Length: 431
Image 1 (cartoon, one colour):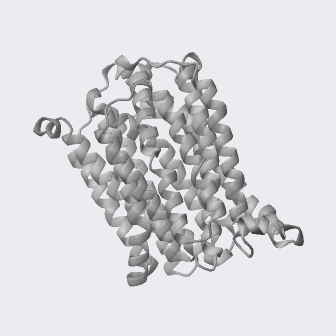
Image 2 (cartoon, one colour):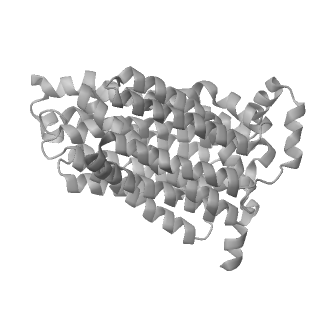
Image 3 (spheres, rainbow, N blue to C red):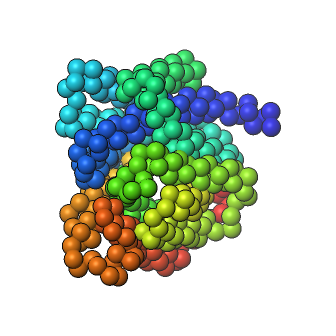
C-alpha cells in the first residue's frame, strides 16, 4: 500500500486538486442552469448552455490534439484553466451589474468549452505520463469516483451556498477551488519528458492532425468503440436535456427534487467506481462495454418514462448509472494500452470529435422534442387514452414521452453495435 502511494503521489496531487476545481465549476453550472430555466421556462434554451460548451469539441478537437502533442502539457493546462476562470469572473461581473442575459451565458460557455477542448487531451496525456501502466484500471476507477462525488455534491452544495450567499457566493467558491488547483499544478506537479514524443515537433501541423485520424483508420476496434459511444452519448445527452423538463414541470417535482435525483446519479457512479477499483480485470473488456450500456439505457429511460414519483426517478438514476464506471474503466484501459503515449493527445482529440459530436445534437434533439413535439402532442385531444395512461397528463408528460423514445433508441444502438463489436478481439496481455 505504501509503495502504491509513493508511485501515485504526483497523480494524487493532480487528481485531487483538479477534482476540487471541477466541483466548483459544476456548482456554478448547476446554479446557472436553474437560473436560466426560471428565466425562460424552455428546455431547449436551457440545453443551449451545454450545446455551446460542447460545440467546440466538434469543431476544434482534432486540431487541439495536434497542438497538445506539440505543446508543453503543464503550460497548456495552466493557460486553459486561467481563461476558464476569466469566463467565471465575467459572469460574476454581469450578475452584479444586473446585465446577465442568456446570450452572455451562451458566449461565455462557448469560450469555456474551447478551453476545455484544448486542455482535455493535455490532461489525459498528463495522467498517462504520471501513472504506471499497472495502475491504469485503479486510476480510472479513482477518476470515476471523483466524478461521481462531484455529481452527488454539486447540486446539494450549490443549493446550500446559493440560499446562504446567493449566486455571488457560488461563483466565489468556484474561484477559490480554481486557485487551489492552479497553485498545485504550478508548484506541486512535475511531468516527465515524453522523449520520443518530441518527434511531433518535427512534423508539419497538417501531418500531425492527419496522423490521429490515420491511427483510427488503421485500428478499427478503437474506431468502432468510439462510434458506439457516440451513439450512447446522443441518447444520454438528449436525456440530460429532457430530465429538468420532466422533473421541474411535475407537481411533485421542483428544484429540490431535481437536485436529489441528480445526486442519485452521482451516488450510483460512486458505488460503481468503488466496485471498479476492487474488481479484477474481466476476461472480455469489449463485451463488458456494450452490455453495461445495454443495461443502463434499457432500464433508466423506460423507468422514468412510466413513473411519476420522485422515489422511482431516483431508482431509475441509480440503475442507469451504477455500471457506467465499469464501462468507462474498461474503455480507458483499452485506449491507454493500445495507443502509443506520444500519439495519445492527437488520437484522444480525434476521439473527442467523433465521440462527442453527438452531444450537442442530442441536447438539441431532446430540448426540441420536449418543447415542439411531445409536449404539444400530450396537450392535444389525441393524447387522451393510451398516451395519458402511459405518460400522465399536464406539463411534463411530453418529457416522459421523450424518455420512452430515448429508451427504444438506446436499446437499438447497443444491440446493433454489440453485433459489430462481437467480431473484434482485444489482446488482454497488454493490460
